[in-house]
Length: 212
Image 1 (tube, rainbow, N blue to C red):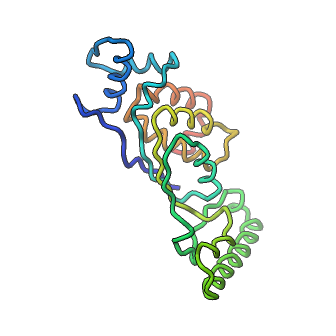
Image 2: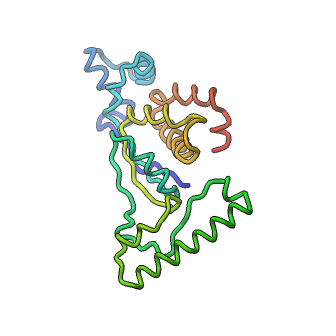
Image 3: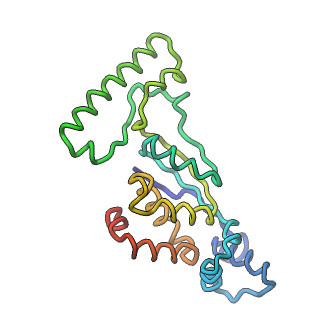
């Protein structure tokens, strides 16, 4: 699994940080003047639940090496934009797989998987040789097929996703993606994401240590 922060909103005034933009949006609400450090202002607004102002900044991530099972969970968060590698157009004759440790670290389970994966690959290749188009041959592919996806979310939606997806009850793969996303975006806007990061690190330290 790889997660990369590839773009983030920049403010066209001042030093160009996303936090400066969000402070400006918040100051408009209260007709107040900035004091040169947006951090305290933003932290207070997020604590108060005044989160509409943080919708004005967004981050874009490139996520690769995750399973279709995980990407299906990710795209259920609808206040976002997605561009995903298409099995309709990409040839999957030699697919990459994203597997859970429960299969990888269990020799018997791994053997079951390898036999199944060999049959899937053979079936896909045979269908293509028979003239079946990629968009139809893909029907034999399992959720374990690895994918690549571009994800853009505003900061408010990111907070929501982190709250619901970074917890032991969440599925391990989507949880791992979101931990990496949080760790990447936090340095860019610590006043927005510092509170939730501190809380999650305190509540679930093993999740962050495992990702380190």
